[in-house]
Length: 164
Picture (cartoon, rainbow, N blue to C red):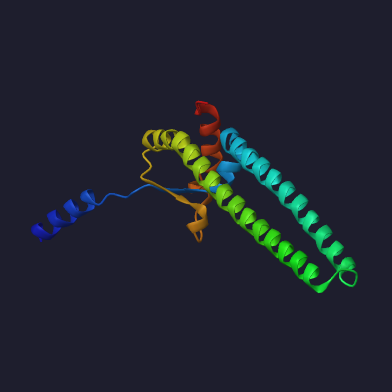
């Protein structure tokens, strides 16, 4: 009986309860000053890209309509030449569009890395002060106690402590 009692008491002390919390990281990013600045920067780049693509697309449609109007007027060889030129321009448009998407995704990754490099020490410091072992993203939590939600607390901590 004594051996079982000692074993259980040692087992309980070595496996003490971990403190687990969660936060909505999307909301943290959107509602912190630094996260909001990042989102604005990315959105501006995206809007600029959309304007360029829209302008180029309008130009392609205009060329297509001009070719349709000329179809019965110009020779078949000239028509084929203009169609091939249009196809080349469409291919260039698609390449440019794919390149813009790729570049935007790279910028997003880079900006998120910079953001997390700045906020991780603040979150880690908060965790150390409050003896928190793990913070999960709320996207990965099915259900949790509202007292375990640190979203608003982290937003406040980051806004108060981020070094620009």
